[in-house]
Length: 118
Image 1 (cartoon, rainbow, N blue to C red):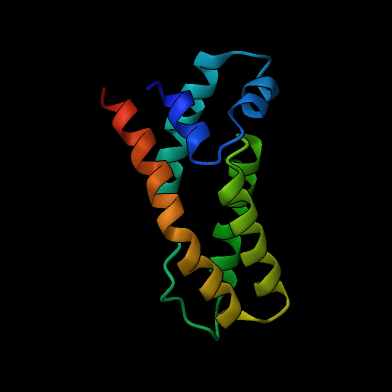
Image 2: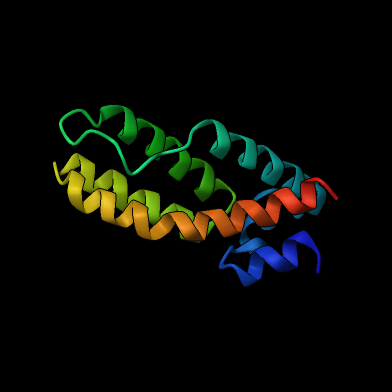
């Protein structure tokens, strides 16, 4: 199964992401590999301190934007919820969304990594 086919099975709107990049599948794949690097460097841990979560909010906002640009819908929606909850001063609810989303993120990142190393 190709990277794009596998991503689609994981809830990624591949068609929308490719369309956003003028229909260039190879560019979309390269951008996915860059997204993988970004997620690795900007990991959000559920162990963040509830009293000072501005850094978490900034990283989550950046990941939300990147996921949205590439139509990685599950992560876009998850990070969007996290940012909204943190802005509303609800870090415990944001932590729950993050904990629920991390296995989905891991599956998507593992998929991208396997194809990056192929």
